[in-house]
Length: 271
Image (cartoon, rainbow, N blue to C red; front, side, top):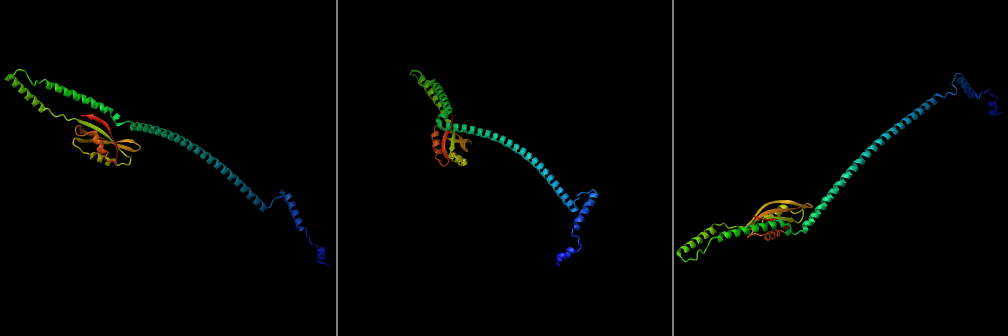
């Protein structure tokens, strides 16, 4: 007899677990707990529900924070854009003003370069002509006064006439000796231009003042802006017309060719 046949003849309850499970279900149904889950399953379900609730809360918080930050960033971006627009408009206005000033300066420079020195000194020349006319009138008046003296007196050949003539000649000679010698002087304003903005203007002025001559006296000076950072030296002097002229001054000053580009007569007035 085989082992399987021996087991078949034994009284063994192979399906006991089925009956135990059916009995448990029966008692649960009687007590009102149909299909009650096991405690381990309940714990797992609660853990899953808690995780789901936490995930939902995190998602809501993230969405709320993102919306707030995005709205804040958007308002800040709009504010910056408006500020940049205002700055851009101000810069455009400043650039337009600078262009206008530069255009006017270039126009003035071109006019000054094209206008000769003689034309720019026209008012001074008019003053010279007027003063020369005054001097001529004064000299003519003095000559008229001198003509009032009769050097020859009467035609009579007597001693009295000779005596009167000698007295008048003597008086005329004394008057001529007492008259002061008129020294004609002029006030000149010179514009001394350098080569560029890197020229040492202090050294340039020293070179100009080093020009010395009898009848020449240097006066005050100042630096006058010309444009593009370049400044010219404007210096005054008093000269005796018989001893010093403008041509001599220009020739002597332009000898300092390392510093001086050109010399112009800005004003010329008789003293």
